[in-house]
Image (cartoon, rainbow, N blue to C red; front, side, top):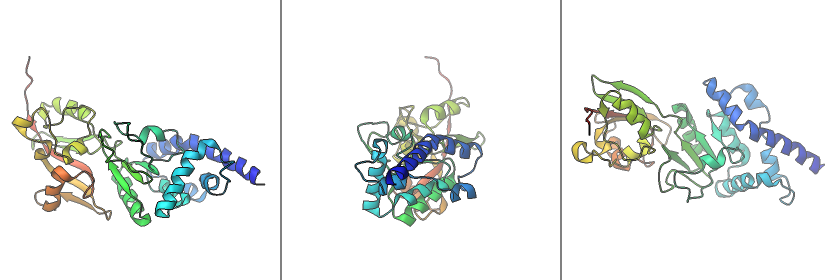
Length: 290
């Protein structure tokens, strides 16, 4: 009887693992969260059965990593696998340890740090960020915010918690040439952002690596080639949109939440809230032939 249940659960779980990408892709292309009645009402996984009901000696090898991580989350925080899996109903895209993409997304630029998050939320909308923060608060789960994933240290990763990955939010949203400002999503990388700005002969004093994330660089200060002439990247920041620890969305600038704005510029990496958008003052530059 147990063997029959295991075979059925394994078959379902393997199918779900293969459908990880398809489910999220459908949600993204339809511009919605996976929250319709059919998605909520059907039994979306048998992985909790495999991890919690099956004898460890006959547990399928391909689910050892998933079961270890889920069991550690339960041991440390009292959150079971069914609750963890319910996160997929709240956000556009989430990657679990049983998903094929997990080993790629659980690592940062520096692969020396072997971190195993319980889930990686790929935030496509600010609503994904708010829902993830609220989910972690409700279940007392640790989480880390990640921008470009360039960091040498694993500050944007967490073992057995939730990684909030903003790399899908990587656009230069608006360039105002009259006001000389630009609004950038926090997951944007320096290379594409610089290319977009230089097409308008504009510049922000950025860092030296094209794979650096705009968010992490700015909130950490921002040292770059043009430091002596234009200062740090954070010196050009004029506004930040932030989701606070309680899920509230606020602006931080020289008029609103001034203390928060001061703190974000240099110590903002995951300390005071999750920054979703950054507005910078730009400078006009000319092309020079060398």
